[in-house]
Structure formats: structure tokens, C-alpha cells
Length: 235
Image 1 (cartoon, rainbow, N blue to C red):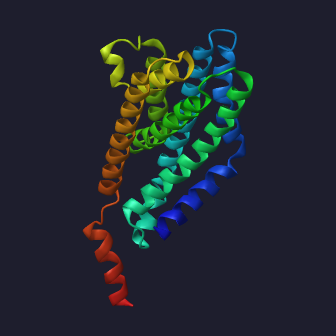
Image 2: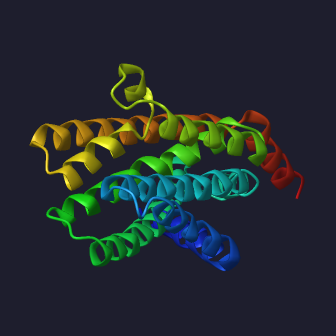
Image 3: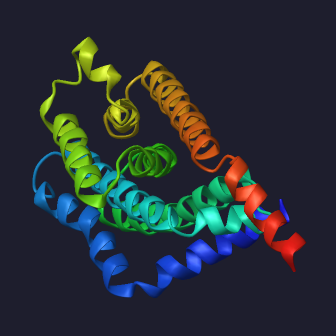
């Protein structure tokens, strides 16, 4: 696990150096929240949560695509694929949860809520789903542009589709609606259970799928292991 923590520290340092990008992404949930601030409380919080999902998944997308040029060299230097992936995911989760905590404080101070901790749970589950979602898209596309278009489509569908439809449950952030309804509308615990089950299932599935893609992409290849040995023998 020590190497995974080293990777997490390297990724976090790299992301935190991009202060302008982080600042812009951090303001996305605020813009979404203020856009519906004068409407129903539930709508404002739901929009803030989806803005948080957009920010974290975008960060994961760019971090994942940027790591494609570095991870093969780290793999040759002795790092395992699961250490590289786990470290990157932990860095994204750490930054995302810090951002979620900041927005939870803003919402709690701004709104009169009967279930404030449920709002915090909603934001946390959103981060846990969005981070591996961004990494999965980054691992599946060759460039950032294609990944950004996929993210725009997913978030746009999340806004536009009726959450009551069964097809809406296929979307990765459907749990956001269930948890938000429980947190704001004081509904029964069924919303909480469905939201948690959906969010956890998607988080585990996205994490596992991205880990498999990373293992395949970073698997040892014969020519990569033979070349260093031949060079050593010549030396």
C-alpha cells in the first residue's frame, strides 16, 4: 500500500499545482447552486450536487488521460497496475470529498434543513461515483475532447430525464435524486436505501471496470521485458 500512497501524493501534488483549473472546477457547483437558489431548496441542492459530479468527473477524466504517458514508465520501475490506479483514485476522492465538505457547509449555513447530514451523504456519494466515472471515461477514450463530450451527454441526460422513468435508473448519478429527496423532502427511508444501493453499486462497478482496463493497458509485454534484459547482457 505504500506505493499506492506515493502515487496518490504525486497525483494530488500535480492536480493542486493547477490552481486556476481547480478554482474554475470548484466554482461549477456554486454556479449550479445559485442558478436554482431562488427556486425550491431541493432543486438548488440537486443542481449543486450534479455540479459537484461534473467537477470531480472532469478532474478524473483529465487526470486519467494525463497519466497514460507516465504510468507505463512507473509500471516498468516496479509499480503494479492496482497501485497506480488505487493511488490516482484515492487522490481524486480526497480532493472531491474536501470540495463536498466545503459545499455541505455552504448549504447548511444557507438553508434551513431538517436532515443536514443526509445532504452531506448525498454529496459524498456523488463524489464516490463521479471519481471512478471520470477515470473510466478517461481510460476508454484516446483524447480529452471525446471524454468531455461523453461527460456533457451524461450530465445533460441526468438533468433532462424524468427520474421517475425506469430508464433514468441506468444513469450513474440517479442516486443523487433519491438521496436529495430523502434529505430535503423528509420522505421515508426507502429513498435513502435506494439511493445508497444505487450509488454503492455504481461506485463498485465503475471502480472494478476501470481497474480491469488499467490492468490490461499496463500489463507486462514481452518486448518490454526482453529489451531491458538484452541491454543488460550487452553491458
